[in-house]
Image (cartoon, rainbow, N blue to C red):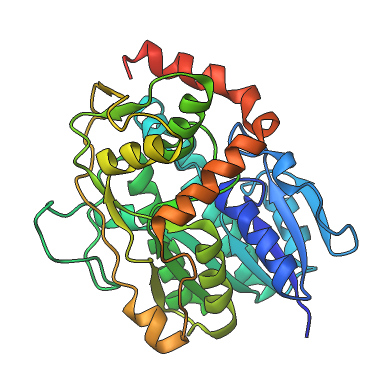
Length: 333
């Protein structure tokens, strides 16, 4: 049967991709709750069916609004978060307000209304791995966050686990590796480099570019979350990854090559403080227990599709580009 879903942060990058995915692949109805901070963009939700989608502007820490919305839905998928490491190093407070207090507010509503709750998190809660370490993160890896961002996400994960155990909230958690794809803010690594090339600006690479990320296309993340919502065991955590380990240098050089530029046409800039070395996800539980498989297993093709999206959707990202570059230029990055 069709469900009524509430998606928090649904005007953001991975949230909006999830909304598009749900409306394209199910009969569910979706309500998006988003505060529309700088990272939210209503244009990311253009073209959705009006009879199955509605948007509510608001804060997940607004208990009265959250209570009202929870009364009318069957399940909640919680994407809303402050999520950019650089911003958390510059001003940690919004990360506490949204990632901790906001998640608490949602959990209390889920508890009151007995709603199915799925919490979206990140592999960054586990800290990082050595570059030559064959290990990957699993559901039992101890938390070891490095930044204000990842520490507040770790805190929100622990709140979810406590509300499951103490109050019987019907919740699951997923921790995902780095996403790429359409609708990602140009402050993030891949879209920043793509839009730099489009604008005739040399891409920027932190330090030596040896830091490794485990890339997954946002549509694969969406399909995994929908699978967990449908089949996941209450109280469990599932790691989402697509075996996409690449170091930042290789990613920048591939972007340049795919866009017809010399592979070395980029600049090295001051490294990020506390920059994690390597993330790597072991998604065995998700694949074996729930039968999920990523569709975008060719990173080069997925990246080419992403480049094409930014090339054909400049009106979506152009209004924020100059401000982002000015912010980084002031930091020498």
